[in-house]
Length: 339
Image (cartoon, rainbow, N blue to C red; front, side):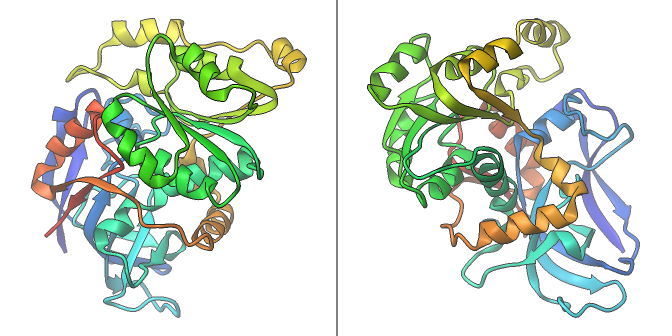
């Protein structure tokens, strides 16, 4: 069959992402073919297009990590799915397509009350928040938690997950216009990124201990967040948004300067401070299918609200969607619809 995709042959710019028509083989045994109806955008998409993501394929590739759609064909036999079933899932690249073949291990039945857009908006950022808070962050009742980029998709899902415990939640955002969103999803306090971040946080904390930080910015916000942690505190880092290209092309001078001045933690100081720094790359779970499925099962048992969708674009507007997402001014999830 024929499908439309957005494929990149040479990384370095969003403009290198080209819409193409290509053939798709029938699904193999253990696979299904999904007619994609919605795609979720992630910062990993932008970084992969610019060639700045370590997991980026070396050859030509189709970006995209999550999707929702309907099963169009089944490879062999399946006791779990049938043609026409609405599903959502994750893939190690390849979601920017009207159709894709995917293992049944990484798709899930779409909840009855969810739209396709809801399904595409959920798995990557919800899994990121869950993995950071629970397996790594060891979230406990009574913890005080600081979340960077709190009005983004991960930040909103982190609030829903953390509020299942008796936590105090502090959200860090880039603009005060996002405070109302933080109130709605359960943040107790919030502040804007600024040179006074460290002192503003000290004022918010008062006598409280900062137990856990979900960190995705890098730079001074990483360093200050680590310093603010109480003994036995955990900083979980899963991104470095300060490396997000602000140019339409890959600016090596700017990137090199940020790389050379990136935060550095002294292991001896970690020991004396009794603090922990944990980092992860969610796409690693795509190679650990049993672990991925276990975490996703535990996540779904929490019965979380649907993800907040801030912007929707059509498939024809995918490049515009990426440019908008790259600027970091959106709230919640950016989703691309395929009519």
